[in-house]
Image 1 (spheres, rainbow, N blue to C red):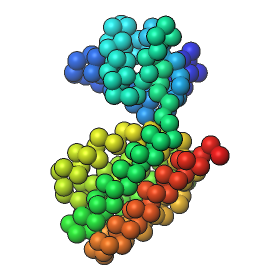
Image 2: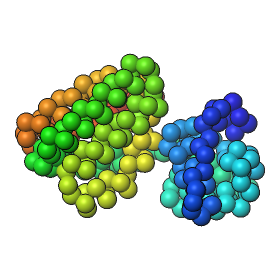
Image 3: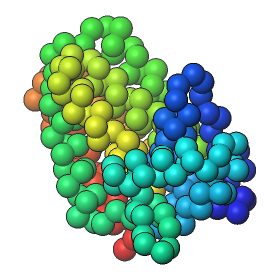
Length: 224
């Protein structure tokens, strides 16, 4: 465990090319959304710079951008801390996610072809494998890819853009309940695939709404 609380191997390599400040921003955002950096954790510029192999300046710029976007809190005389989302913040975000994903499921049922169905089945199989191996990070990643594929199959660019704006936060909220949701989440994915394959728009909408609501309720129940 590193001094900032990062597990060994958790620090992503900075992708090239691109402005350094943008690459540092993406690296820190990934660490936050995967909860390698936990909500409430103190973020020390010099330590983060050392882990990422950069100077403090791009780290400072990245933290300021993350603060503007609500991922980091900058406290006078105390420094930077990973934002701790309130229950209300999570509820609002996950409620919007339900609306977007339910419509995506309906459109996917109307538009998806055999190749799209096969892609969903493959992603589902990989997610089931991650759960079987107790690979929480893998399950979270595959869950995000599965839902992104449904959104792609919906074929609505505006809907996809809106979903993209909340995707990172959905991953942030899903990570702490991924193990709790476990296999049941992928059972629900299988049911959704069947509804999409049958072109049953009403059932696909209902199943996706129920699926995302299960995640929302699991998030709120996690600390009880």
